[in-house]
Image (cartoon, rainbow, N blue to C red; front, side, top):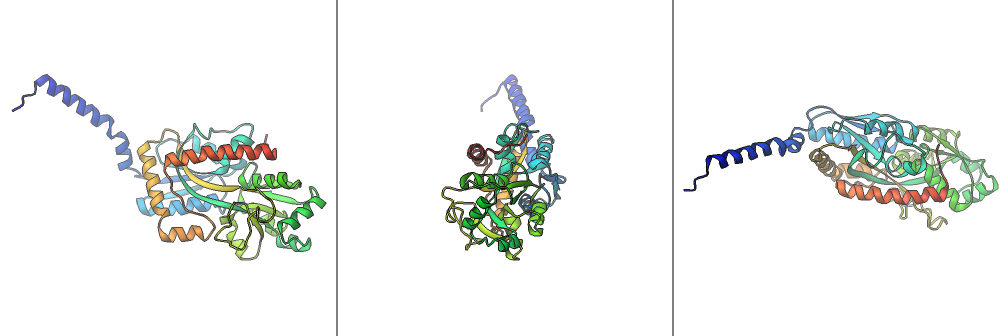
Length: 334
């Protein structure tokens, strides 16, 4: 029989005890998480694609966790207000952010100063949905000016520089930059009218206060189907399965044009990795449920659910890509 000296046994016991104190910290956080309400901050108003994505995720996580998961809309400054609040939240997993291509890939190139650092202040969780933007017009404006295609619109804009009002979901958003890129590539000029999100922007386009918008497809889908908006082209390299008859911008004559939006979950920097991994796994599982996939795809969104590491790499690529678009368009916000 092996006899272990008392002093060695005591040392081993101390090591085991120390390991029990340190190793289970993250595991314990994940195992007991969540034990109360979780908040998903949405830095845009209700009704837009950011809000749609957050509410789908909140509903599914609430069912999986048997705990309330609430959506908290904090709009303003192109998503910077709500994102800044999320960056300052306690990193315990009970405040998450539905970030966007604007808040985490565009704004640092467009705004002179941000109330957060998109890299240092956040830990990536997962990409939820990538979506196309769509160039859509007020139908009465389109009919009045005989605009049936992108080429018709370009001709009208060149004949009426600065006279067409282009709505967007806010300064520096992908809907704004999609329009700026369009103008840069076609040599046209519109008057940019920023709103605090998709819902108020779409309301004014449909009412005729603004003439057109490059909006995220999911937030516009219902209005497109109802004939309240006139689609001309999607901004992605491929057509959207949700609108197979609508051409891409390249097919419509703007060669090389490509822009898209995306929405993903992030946590305040320092959130325990085990919690981040749990959220990512549960979101990925929810997004692969057939009813959830059908719901999102019907609105022009494609469910994702990639790992935190993959999402981090994706955001880095998107930041570089949109920085080039900003330089090309010359868009800036003081």
